[in-house]
Image 1 (cartoon, rainbow, N blue to C red):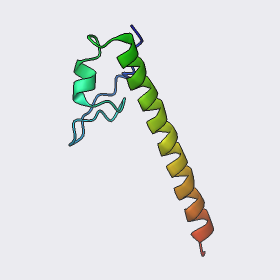
Image 2: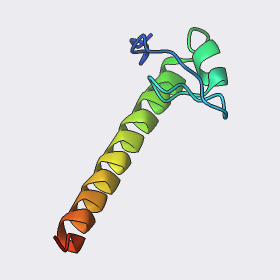
Image 3: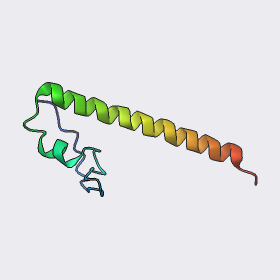
Image 4: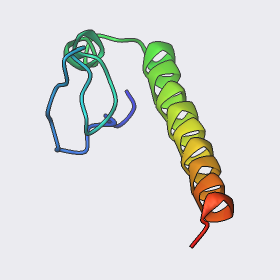
Length: 70
């Protein structure tokens, strides 16, 4: 069993997605019963999501920098 991706900052949004760890409610409640392979898939999916968000944030920051007309 892998270590849970829970970061102890649990708060669900309107789509039942945890704002702390990014898992949906069914993934949270099913973690203990999930196979090692299923848990690994969830962990990797979280990592990919974080990488996408980091790239998007960088892109937005660059756009704001280059569009600054002050």
